[in-house]
Length: 188
Image 1: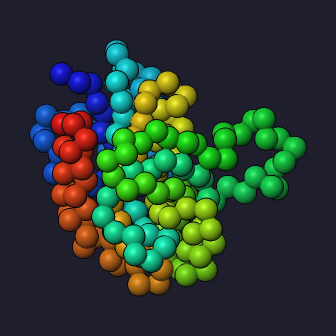
Image 2 (image 1 turned 90 degrees about the vertical axis):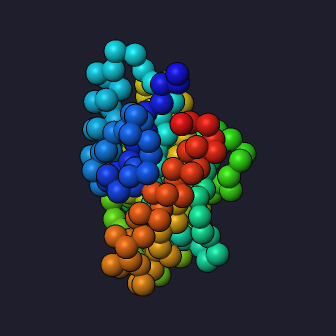
């Protein structure tokens, strides 16, 4: 049996995974995600063969819907140009991830804010198609431990002014789509 650790920010995003799945709920945001994944990997008797981060996300471009695999993730609320003299102390500006080729692929912008305004959406859409609040942290922790990671994100909202209040009502649909994607990829 494969050793896969599923990571989600909230219980609702993992609600439709099988009961026997090894699931880590991190809490919302980069710091809770980084701490939870790092602690889980550091305490593991044996590292998982893969971490699969499942979660909902905002669409930064019109027409994006469904589940996407992430091939590149950035941390959008940390501005490196201000800190050019200390770059050697920082994590990479972006992380590249391998994908299966079985799902549509997008770049992901991660930050500690729920994107819900058109100006931020347009700025982030220059480099990424999707946004979330945990993906970069999960990927960075996995890379630090040498554990392969897959990020599967399901579009829950358009990351604009209409998004506020929408998210809670669509998490269950997202969890169903994510569980189906996980099954299609053979992770369960």
